[in-house]
Image 1 (tube, rainbow, N blue to C red):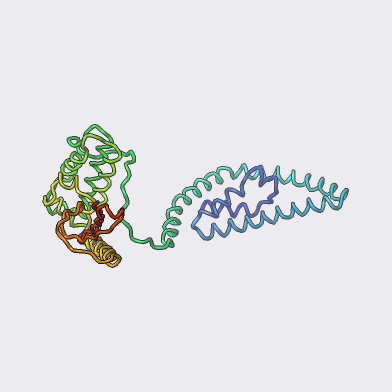
Image 2: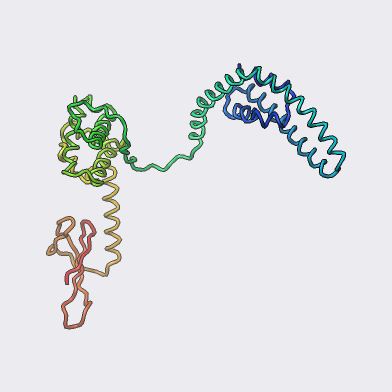
Length: 317
């Protein structure tokens, strides 16, 4: 209401370019127009700004006529300057009377802008195109207060932050209540197994990997297995990303592997299935081999081996 009263009082003032420049009242009114959510206040601010823009256009036109008309415009300019000086004095006196009201209106407008900005962000965020589903984002290790119980503090800010974030990951969806688990103690044990004597980037990456997999809403089974004790802290600390993946992701990876194997088998020119070779990757002996003469005729042939289980390829000279 104070801002609206102030805008209405400004409507009755005789405004000049000099007064606009010295008081910068136009900047304040434009700020109210941008950030205020009251439609009546915004409408009043728009009217004032429109009138002041017309005043600026008239002043610009007057300067152009002054350049073309010569002495006549000089006399008119003197008259206008004398009138404007009187108006400035009158307007300054009036502006001083309303100085306190203007200050209060500015403070209110700043409050309105701060409260309306989150609403604008929410409105803009609702217009953003839906993102393609992706893997959980890696947590950051920005410095912030630690809320761990004193008995689990290590004295190292990085380690304490990792334990705190692991605790939060274990507490996702309140599964820990079902198993009556002390999440801080379990997180401390997991972090201790991950530590391995060094806190380099490998340590941080391993912690991030555990946190993102434990918090993955598509893989609740991993978190529940850790909480119920089926997966011990020492095991989760050394599991690979493939081992921590959800059943759905494992099936997808297996299907892609089988498809790649079929493509390799279609591309090869025959071959003999044998169990004489052991795959160095999956340690199985279901292989297919081909012998090709890659060197001179008196040299032995090169054997190319394909694992039918995982698609691994190697050669034996």
